[in-house]
Image 1 (cartoon, rainbow, N blue to C red):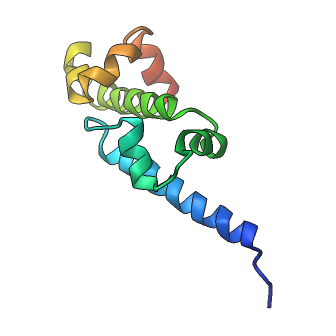
Image 2: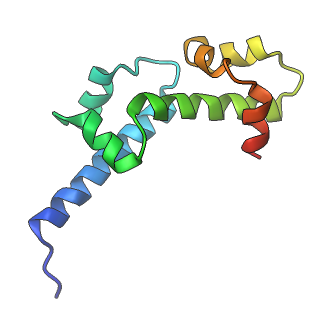
Length: 111
């Protein structure tokens, strides 16, 4: 029988919480994704720092990445849609920053 250390139990708990947050973000891309809201899902005090350490990018970077991925998927599966229609479909507020780079570059890198 293998003994699990307290540190390993804590790490597993943190991984579970961060995974729960990542699921919440993907399901609520057009919803309230402020730090306070997302941190409440994880129930962490220093959530932003822990999220960045575990995921390898900031919370805002992760959210932006998910929105760009969603936009890229829309462009691939709905080539008739305009960039504006895609931005609206994947939350205009999130796609506004993604629009600073050509969306076609994002779409081709996700194939």
